[in-house]
Image (tube, rainbow, N blue to C red; front, side, top):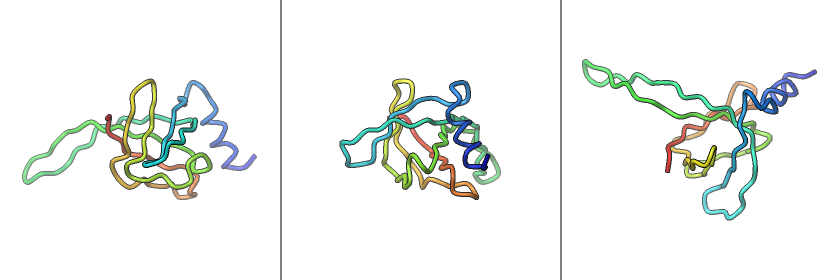
Length: 103
């Protein structure tokens, strides 16, 4: 089994992933994808202090969303999010991490 097949199996697991709806910015087309949610807190340096903020990140397979863009929308559990910064890919370009904000 290849690494890509193993990643696909993780995204197919209903305990690890969730179904979501993906819509490209400016398109009427909506399609279903599997996502894995991550919500790490981030510490950002600001002068001599730090700002502690919550973030919402979703991982999506690049085979499902080949070119995510800022402004694209993702609906998970009835909440719609917009991609707010450039998506980042993993080393093997199998997974995109999407930094999103609720709309």
